[in-house]
Structure formats: C-alpha cells, structure tokens
Amino acid sequence: MNTPPDLDSRPAKRARTEDESEPVVCCEELWYDDGNLVLQAERTQFRVHRSILCKQSIVFRDMKEASCTSAAGSANVDGCPVVELQDSAEAIRYMLRCMYDTGILERPPTNTEILLALRMGHKYLISTLFEYAASYMHRLFPSHLADYEADGSLFSSADRDPFEFLAIARSTGLETVIPALCLSYLRDLDPGDLAKSVKDHTLSPEDGFMLLFARNKILDCTLLYCFKWALDQHRHPRCVSVAACDQECLVFRDRVSDETYLEAAIDLEHGFLAPWDDLALQVKLCPACKRKAERMHEEGRGKFWKDLPSFFGLKPWEELHDFAIE
Image (tube, rainbow, N blue to C red; front, side, top):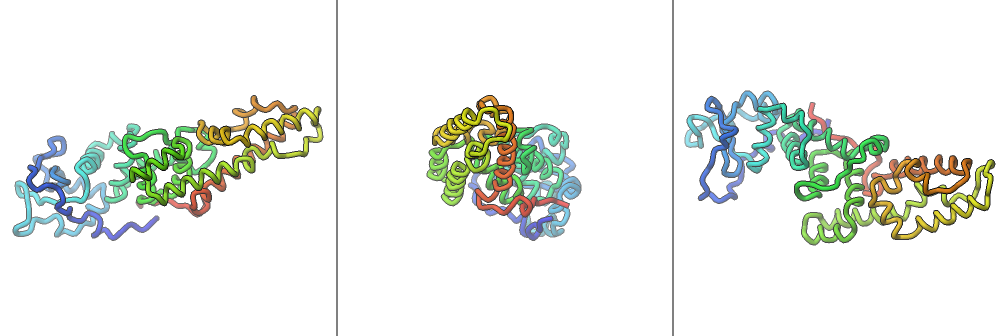
C-alpha cells in the first residue's frame, strides 16, 4: 500500500478565500436534526453524524479529538462543532451522499462523479468510495491488452476538463491507468487540440510536449510493431504465389507509410491495435502468408502494449503500482 500523507495535514481548516459577506446556507438534503457535527465547505454547511463519518473514513476516525470538539469561542451550530474543510461544497455533498446512501455506489458514475469519488475517497481514506471510482478507471483505461480489446470504451469526452483524469490519476496514485489514459488522449485529440489545451492552460506545457512526443514516436514505430509483417521479405514456405504476395505487401507497406493513413490509424477506434480479424479483409495474401502475417501482427500488438508506458516516459508495466486503502 502506498503511504498516505500525514493524517493531521489532510483535512486542514479551510482558508477564508470566499467572500465572507455571502450568507452561510444549509444543505437541506444533508442536514440531520440529530446530527452532532457540522461540516462547512465554502459557504455551505452540512449537519451530519460523526459516527457515520468515522465508520467509513479513516481520516475522520483518526482526526484529533480537538478538531471535533467545540472549544471556547469556536464556531458551533446548535451546540454542534463546525469543522471547515478545504473542499468545494459540490465535493463534500457528493462524498456525504455516498456515505449515507451506499446505493449510489451501485450505479454507473458520470465522469464528474469518478473524479469526485477518487479525489474525496483518496483524501479522506474512504475505501468504498475510492475503490468504486478506481474500478471504473481500470475498466476505462486497462493495463492489459485483452481488457482493452474486450471493452474498447476509452476516454471520449468528459463533463469537465478532460485532462483532470490525468491529474487525478497521478495525485491518487493510480499509476497503471496512465498509459492507456494517455493513449486515449492521442486517439481523441489531434495535435491542434493539444496545443490549444496548453494555450488555454488546461494542459501543462510539459504534458503537452510529452503527449506530442509520444504521438510522433508511436507513428514512427507503427511499421515496426503491428505492421511488421508488411516489411517481411520472406514468404511462407507454402506460399502459392510469391510474386502476388510480395506485391500485396508492397502495396500495403506504401499505404501504411502514408502520413494520412498513420494519423487515421492512431485516431480510429483501436486503429493499428485492432485484432487481426479486423484487418484481414484488407490484406489479399495467400492463406499461408496470411497466417504468418497474423502471427506477426499479434506479436507486434503485444510488443506495442508492453512498450506503451515507455512512450510516455513511464516505468515498465510491472513497476507501475496503484494506491490502495487497507
């Protein structure tokens, strides 16, 4: 298990950056008359039960007694101590809703909810919340090629800034999702989109360069991975027409060497990572040479996936690890 930050430093008092002239409002949905603790995020208060928070959150459980005890002169509401948190009201509301209604965690989350669940589950060490969102991240951005093929639903759009997925994966220690996540950015965003994101400050210049560099490296390596069979000049011993198969490989090699084709291969669903069955109809080789090409294609796909983390400057798959709450 990764070691989390010092617990005392996690739910620190919120800096008073919001407009103090704005009235404090109560969240009616999460305001329990028999609650014994008031959480305040921004200018919204939530009256909840400390026992429920402590049961599900290691951070609330280990929080120093003084943090939840009303000292002389400290804020309180109807005798309940007020704890101000450094989180948005939206984030605290979602976290509390999940803690009070666990049925929410049985429904597919929106992209916004995945981000909130990861952030709050990690910060307050709520295992059910964190694992709920982490499981969807692993499903969307798998570490195994077979899972990638089976699901195929990589990132396509988000309710908010798409690069929040990269930031949250890093900050919550989900290392194994980052390679497929970065690959999904290259599928769905062209270089112009990446440049615009850097200009709009939604993507850091460092990450923009990393993605563009990886894109170029992947395009340069395409023939050496999945299409290596087209470079092979040795026909299968049982080839029935060496000249015809040589010509077919030449035609296909010229086609995939075209920059436009390579751009499409990385953008289209699965692209050059598609299983051989998706490519076979485009290849007019004799049966023996087609079987050899299939074997080389599948080997190339496996090698590409094995090397995928290196394109983004990451450690090998076997050295990538995910944070877990125990």
